[in-house]
Image (cartoon, rainbow, N blue to C red; front, top):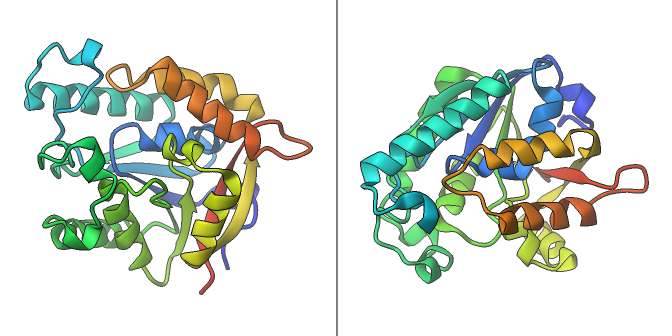
Length: 243
């Protein structure tokens, strides 16, 4: 049975699957902040080899330099939140030569990385033996997120909950977002109040200096505000498989 509240996740071994360095902090940074030091958290970044950074942050740096900077940002985030850290240095869509349109439209089944990356994730999960895995829904269609979603869908005999990918989630009308996830066989698992940790979530996002802009923060706030409830103005949601 999937946990139905954030409190039910406390004290558990939780593996956070992050396609890129920043996805967990962006998408479920509030949940992570609330669980910090109350659960056994481990973050695993999958596509750790990247040449993409904000123009003002890259300064024509090499892919090795940018990848190292992104790893430092990731490690600093995990240190602040008392999270164990793993990095799989799989090449991301940028290193595959995909442009923005291609990375958001290419099906994971057509990507030559998919089988190997799915196997890497499956073996890593088997070694870590988590009680709960948090993985991206794959909203927005980014091929790297799709690949991690496929790997998560293949996990059995383990709790798998799915988070709404920020910033991609904010670009979809809420009814369309919920329709897409329902069609994919997902159902709401929980809505977590993040208002009390919202400021610290923003600070954690800014820690990813090579990736974060004011518009990213605005997109996160937009989505967190519209999924809030009567008792929580800002929230994050998790989904689970129907079967």
